[in-house]
Length: 179
Image (cartoon, rainbow, N blue to C red):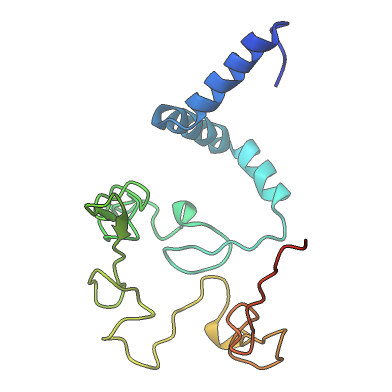
């Protein structure tokens, strides 16, 4: 940041004001509007594409490689509702950060997060722990085929099926402060 004040106190106040303003909704909307205007220019969009050469993009709409959802050719000239779908409640028009159903406050001040299952559309569990899910139901991977994924292999005991963090043979070591 460019120092425009010779007084360190004024500079600190300026930095604090800028940091405070960055997290506001208005600041996010403003930066989103500027980025949208910048990347709507094909030259700038092409520069961005060249900078990300080699990175694979997958569409969340059609699942094909090479583009993202907002550039999906299947959505062009269609009357499909393009608003965001909340990953918590499944409603359109907001995201999981602003979802009203996400948190329910308890009397002690703590909050409980309620996630919505994509299989049965019930709250309280996710698709991996769904009681209605078929045991052979495999959660599809966004990046690769689920069949081509390598199984976990623990670096501690060298067995497959878990990683070092969840290893059953791992013992918790507590260090005592040295005197």
